[in-house]
Length: 123
Image: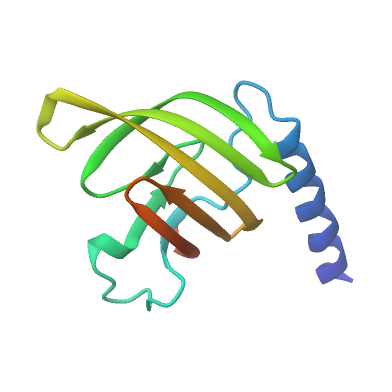
């Protein structure tokens, strides 16, 4: 029964993403994420992301701020970001992330820097 309730709540969360307004954010569990084929323990920083809420998936090498977001499907979001390499605020760059939510603990991210599938590891 708990699995069914969880599935129903996840479905509502994904449906809400398609209707997301200004501050709802991505329906992902907060915490560390790693590339799907990478073990959580000992994963290199290049295979890690951190999600703390909103629309930005934080990388260890850059600081990014969401400028715009729009739903491109029932569980897909395109996010326009302004980013700075760590320690280099004088040289901002634009990034556009395409995020496809598979569940509240798994997503696919594609941008000009690559493409990957990520899964949640811990808070």
